[in-house]
Image 1 (tube, rainbow, N blue to C red):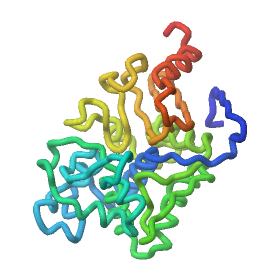
Image 2: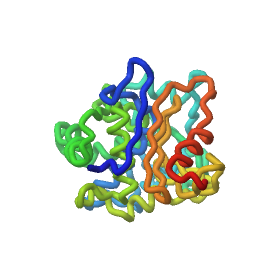
Image 3: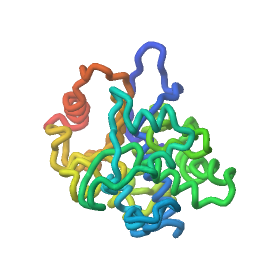
Image 4: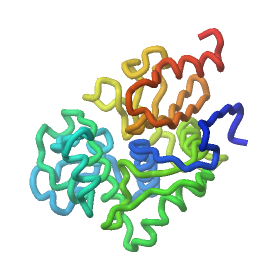
Length: 283
């Protein structure tokens, strides 16, 4: 059993079989798809000339820059008003194309900015590795979800047929936990190496200009800026409305929290302390 010790609780109307939207936790699913393609030799972090229309300086953007949110592309990640993010998610038929049309605003690789547009460009790059649309749509299920028993997982495509890799994966809390366990176990699932361990290392290594808070489509606690009372080795998936998958190697622990947090009333740091104390009362 993949669950060594397990505890769970649900609000009324929800249970272990309720698929829930992960919002930007989906970015980490996109990370896994890229990691699998790199293991298969179909992509490389140092690869450039990533988008056909990038015939200017943007051709120098490497996949590494996109993964670490350091591409330098202009993007306004704002959900309170009409912005690049809301225009892309709610008014664009082809979200990857919409994001890839943005100009450079900063020097490539030298400025960090969290951007859902960047992740959807990555999703578009993933799609371009497949000749048949059917093979592309089957890819995350065949190479990731089925292998780790994440059977409830569904990723929505946009109208063009590209997965909305920034935002729209649904899965049950237990299946989100399985995803966390894959990274806790350094890409290995029941003896099968789904992701290279070096890919997990890259994913949790701070992007140079992120101030220690971001890796490769995963958030970090490297400088304990996000959660001061949680371990520095914690890395996590994070969704727009309070969804989290916390991966804590020093505790051999995965914590999933899926709620609707619109008023910032939920104290994540205190929640982590409570759970960690249950696993280690001396904390």
